[in-house]
Image (cartoon, rainbow, N blue to C red; front, side, top):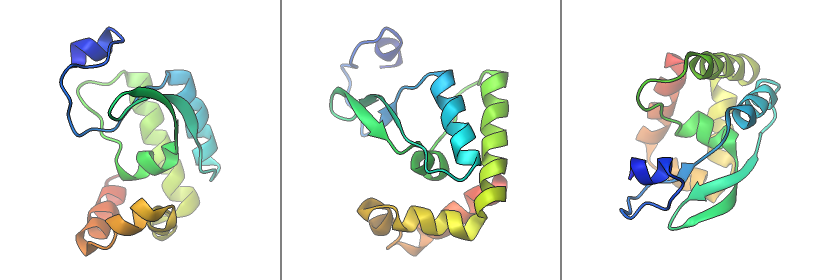
Amino acid sequence: MLEDLGNGMTPTLKLPIDLHVLTYAQFAEASAKMAEGEQARIIGPALHMTWEDHELPIWFDFVFSLQELGQMDPMLSNLLAKTRKDLRTFWGDDKLVNAIKNYYPRGQRLFETKEIEEILRNRLKKW
């Protein structure tokens, strides 16, 4: 699957993932907006069932579900750490959790399970 993605092809193997592809410049621009408290969005290719251009509420995915996989470029790793610190400084944990909870129906459904909020709060503490 990763080889297909690396070659710009739709993977033949279907997994229950939500994958967004963005450039470093897009991420850097969104990070600067998030650091100022903006709920940044990016439009770009996304893999759900098929590849399609999709508006990504990157701030939601960044706070709630972004996972680093493998070794990261040091510049990207530093930007990620700085953005996380800036977000916590600007918003604080309670406001971040409430923003995720109230953003849209999916956030509200996720938080019907009390453990989800605890997991998110623990994640924020590690930032």
